[in-house]
Amino acid sequence: DKSIDLIFITSKNNMHAPLTIKAANAKKNIFLEKPMALNEKELREMIQAISKNNIFFTLGLNRRFSPLAQKAKEIVKNRSSPIMISYRFNDENKAERAWVDTQEGGGRILHLANHMIDVCTWLVGAEPITVTAQNINAKERNMDDNNVTMITNFADGSLATMIYTSLGNNFMPRERVEIYVEGKIIVIDNFKTISFYGVNEPEVKLNEPDKGYEAQLAEVKKRLRGDEAECVTLLDAVRSNVFCFRVLDSLRDKKPVKL
Image (cartoon, rainbow, N blue to C red):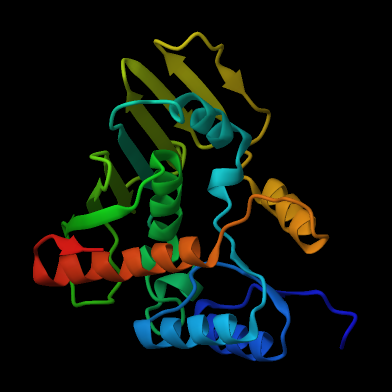
């Protein structure tokens, strides 16, 4: 159908790869919900199909489009030294089976750690180079890793600690990002509030969390119209997926892993 400009793929995770390949081979632009793939073979096949057909592809890594994340980026972009980031994901124990189930969804890390590394990499502006992951209920590779700490080093010397836990409850906000840079501290709570310490900026509190969904789609719309736009690139998408694979490798091998 030549009237279709963009395919949205929001299916269960195990259908992301086959549907993306089919849409790419039909030469359709693609907006895919994360994650890209559940294994590296699928990922390679997706990259090949997207590249061969020269289509526009983007992934639903929306957090960086939040107005509060954009504000934080504006403050840290002119820094001259490395930064430290703490990103905590507090997920209550009851999670959707569609992404916890390892056959259908790939597990919690593949479903959510991609958001965390994307925000951190975007804020730092340098490539992650290693990850060291540990969990308190170690299970077999690709099992449901509920409670994981991921420490990531970046090429510019910056450091991020990412914590995913299902031990908590929903009384505490789901996500919290703390950024430490050159005497300044920026804290984003659940993409609803941003607070500053050592920064001459007032606290911003939104009526509802804004995790960037609408803003990301607005950028995609600009891109399809041929205007300048800030979109999640294929490199961004692949990085987020490979990072999750390497976290699982680190959990399995109990050592740091190169990215």
